[in-house]
Length: 182
Ligand SMILES: [Fe+2]
Image (cartoon, rainbow, N blue to C red; front, side, top):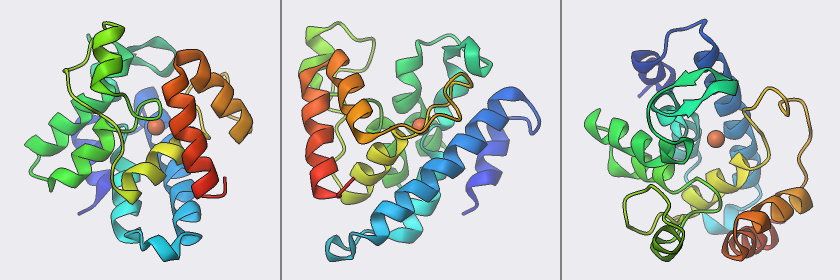
């Protein structure tokens, strides 16, 4: 399976969304592999991570995010579960779609979705497998927004930012940061 070939089914090479997506996905893939290589005792699947991390944001074109050239109809937060839908429909094993669905924030609980009226299907979307946790964590170190693209994001900054969304998010990420030595 070639992740770029799948990306190119939905994005035209050379367009802004394509460039933003591919650059971000490559950076997140590298970061995910770097984290995973230090966690051999947890036996993460590096081959899976390499492909799944490239595809984790494939749903962004279906959402509205002007800064990165996405002109879809759905709110940006939907890009995770929409990505899952695309990959499931594409016939990929369900593990790939789950990485998409569970990577926004530090994962989102069903309780959080209901309490805050978040426009998402009402189910738990929290990383469970080690590969899901690694990719979700790695994703937080790089922003697709061109305004922040060159800025180095630190673990403390991530925890601060997630804390503004909810204590849950910050707590989950802090646990991974400790477990993964981030
Ligand atoms: Fe991402």
